[in-house]
Amino acid sequence: MAENENGSNGIGWFLAGLGIGALVGVLYAPKSGKETREELVLSAKEARDKANQYVEKGKEQLDEYVDRSRQYYERGRNQWTEYVEKGKGFVHEQQDKVAAAVEAGKQAYVKTTAEPSSEPTA
Image (cartoon, rainbow, N blue to C red):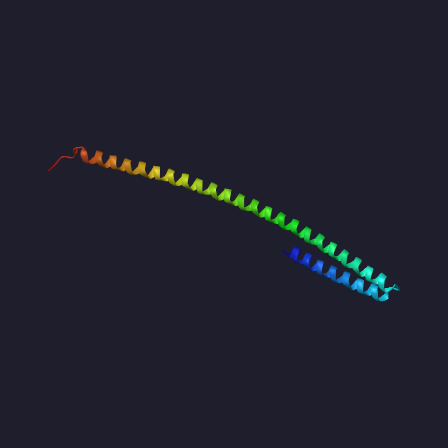
């Protein structure tokens, strides 16, 4: 984030310097009015071209960040899906174990209550 802010400030300072430089050049240049106007137009066109280059570079960087964000999102989503599936498998496994333990307990209870007592009665 700090790099982007510095880059924006850098563009602003560059354009301000370009404008100041053009103004100083106009004030101190020993040229005719026509030559001065042509030079101002040329400087303005150069500044516009430079600004367009920075805009294009910014768009490219933004596209790169969007693509990278999509990759991170997809990777996270895939990991989440994998963990959910592992969790479902674990839950089913535990359900099967609990069901088997309950069934074994029922069978043991039935077996112990159905057998005649081997202890003598008084």
